[in-house]
Every structure is written in C-alpha cells, then in structure tokens.
Image (cartoon, rainbow, N blue to C red):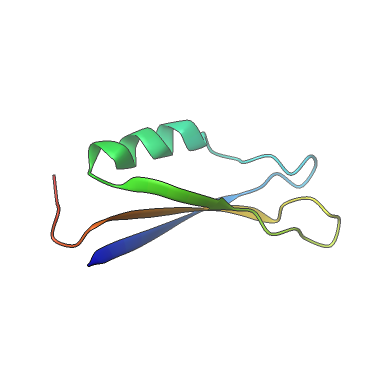
Length: 64
C-alpha cells in the first residue's frame, strides 16, 4: 500500500516557468522518504503551463 502527496507549484504568467525551485522541493521530499513519480503541467489558455504538480509516493507508514 502506498500513500501519495501532491505539491503544486505556480507558474509565472510570462514564460510559464515554475515560481519555486522544483529541484529543492524534490530533494527535500526524497529526504523524507518520498519518491517523485510524475510532474504534471496542464496548459492554460495560452498553451503555457498554468502550474506544475509534483506527485510523490512512498510506502504507507514509512516516515523519516
């Protein structure tokens, strides 16, 4: 059994780039036992990402 965590990072209005350092977020979560399984980036009306959703998983009950 796994548990999942979703972290949303807003995108910049011009350029559609993440407003936060996703590498730092991934590293911090990895230290807590989370494994990145996907980055989801749906487009807005301008074909640029509206936001970035980082999806993590870890075995249920596995806390560090």
